[in-house]
Picture (cartoon, rainbow, N blue to C red):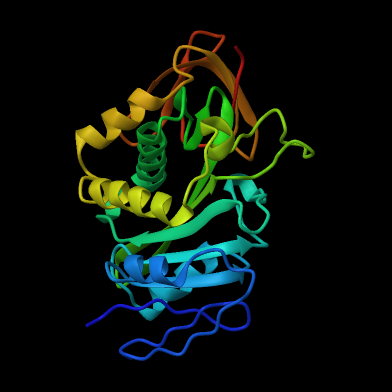
Length: 279
């Protein structure tokens, strides 16, 4: 069966499944080319939207409808993108790679989903030649301490099976110069001083996601993610949403938990949270 991408008007491309002469509605604002979208759709189920509230929201709906591992929801702009701890994701239309990757890990390893996403993004950025790539625990991909990408993993359960909507936002050409994020975030094109094709970037990133999805239970996934962490051995403070804890980021466990050495000398395990590194 030929896999074709689909969307919902207005401001979308819509291609019906299993039609050799698809009907197309194309927004004049769209910079994703029809031919390139078809190339990606030939390898996996793909739903593209010119503008939606949240790729994760649509992906969770798709999971309940039924779809296969590796399916992707992609958008040019989302106006209610979510991050961890309820934060909003800032990216004007056409400036970021915004998508959700769907997969179904073994239930006991679903907790590694954000680990998988952060590693795939970090490796892709490294392959592009972006300097000083690191992961700030648990899943913010940075270049020289400036945020490039954020990841939000959300799970849905059906018949005792867990499926994950792994939302990824990657700054490609966002201009942060007049925003509150001027000194905390960066974009790939700014760092590389060259233009990038977002769909080519998506294709490379999907290759890494597919690779690590098949190795979600492996020690190699954990060790590779750990190698990118840029805050181990440093004093940190973590906001868990219900309070904060500080200490030295001593180590991480295969579950993704961070081991802190507190000022009283005791160790404490923390799972996720928003981390501030004190240099």
